[in-house]
Image (tube, rainbow, N blue to C red):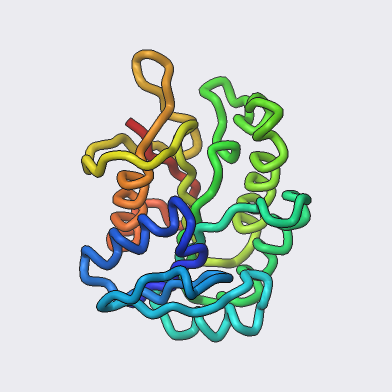
Length: 206
């Protein structure tokens, strides 16, 4: 399978690239700084600004699935950035499948409260922005899946062991919601290869 990974140099995106290559997929790694990408077999680096609809469409037309792993952090206006980001994907992708890394703020608590409404203030703007991006993707005609991380995601161990859920934040017996970026990538590539959540939001956590 040929995959376009947008945001390929980020903490999550880089691990998605690693996981995809380990499974034998051909990867087009797209980023604003392709010089940061180390050459490897099966990997092609491309320069991309995700709001460049024409270039995004050209790259998407040549792959089986687009994996978008960017966050609205570069402009200082997460809401506007998320809207531009989602709008570009909707306009550019056409019938190409999208698997998008969302935010935990797009999930709900078991009582229905949006996680974006209860996160610490330092994360609130980005959480709301990512939820907005998800809602725009959901309202589109795209063949999409959005995978939201657990409440905490960080570099760690690849275990291959985790739980899946649709739109509810997963927690363990102690109330913690976490997953390693490596296992998040495993769950995402599993979904790419064997879709279970077409036109849905889902999450993975321990």
